[in-house]
Length: 114
Image 1 (cartoon, rainbow, N blue to C red):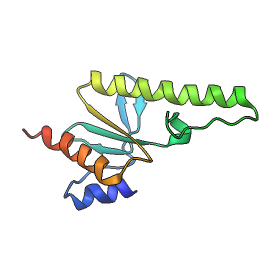
Image 2: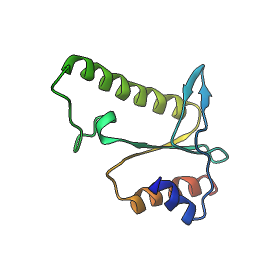
Image 3: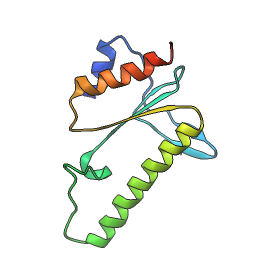
């Protein structure tokens, strides 16, 4: 939500809850700029395996290891599908500074107008 508010303050308008279908696969970025074909994901450190803040449960470790591996594999698949279809993908971790992330997204969106 904080990134979305920052993007709005920068004058950028976007879609949320916008499912994209690419090669028969569904991808649902957190923020989508449809005209510029920019997809933004803000990944949670826990669920997406942040190398800095990600932790793994000790109980039922095999189940959780497989769950996190599937999440990370889906992230890589989604990035590849989007890029192969001509989209720009911006990924950020939830712990990153909101202003820095918003600036990165704004540069990606505005580069499509150049």
